[in-house]
Length: 324
Ligand code: ATP
Ligand code: FE2
Image 1 (cartoon, rainbow, N blue to C red):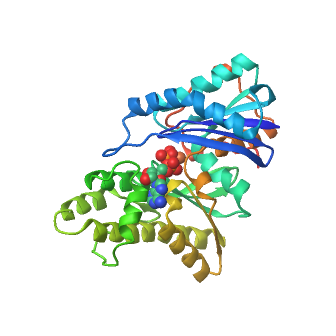
Image 2: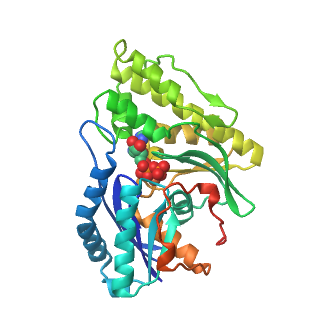
Image 3: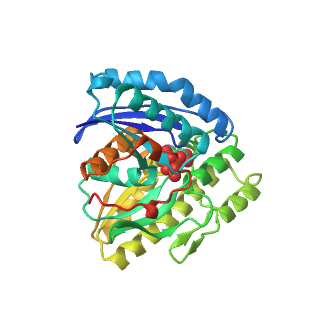
């Protein structure tokens, strides 16, 4: 079965094409800015303009045409309404024009399930660290159960906000990482873990108050050491509670090499293993949407065009995982 996946929940317009477990193409075009965060209408305009080229690039890379596609999967939610709508309209238009079945899938679950395509992690604790979402998850009783999560903004949005304050542009995570490599001087920051939850709002306010007094490099280094330690503390506790020895990272922030190093170290200390998909599958991409569409459809799930309205607020634990 050949599945075309369309991703458009936020900054990235992506098209992935898979044939069963083989990734034939995974192409994207991302909205970026020199000095700020995401402006929803501008990101949606970006996707409208990028859509045709990204689709054509994907088909060309895969060496197929639209008539070879058996299923169109798209990110139905959660995400920014303006940008979700662009992907949904593209998916519906292709579905109707070429008479191909359509299926909407949950973006967060796609970030988790792609770990099964890219790694051998069996029954792991999942640490999902992306722009809007920050959750510690384990699969239990037919659902991805959220054991802990951010009480305010996502870890990626936190890094993006800090970067914006520093005038570094969007996305901020990679820029903070580059700066962090130039320092080893730790500046005390609030460390906010509440039970199994984390919070970044107070750290952001604290960092803002320190911007005049400390170098960007020292702050970048200290921010990473602090927030990654927070995430790995709750992940480790979830591993202990659930008696699981495997950890699977997901989401764009997991591209961070320092985060990866700390995660491997924590798992090694517990005699466990940390699994991390390649960066192209951590950041938003159409491949993970195609893969989730494939496994959802293979389990017999179907959708009519009337069911394809976007779901901007759908949560990871809303999804009935009937394909496992
Ligand atoms: P969500 O999945 O919650 O809807 P999203 O789709 O916007 O959010 P992703 O594409 O998974 O998120 O990840 C984007 C985020 O990852 C951005 O906030 C970006 O700054 C961050 N990021 C990307 N690369 C790195 C890196 N090397 N280090 C830290 N953060 C990074
Ligand atoms: Fe994402």
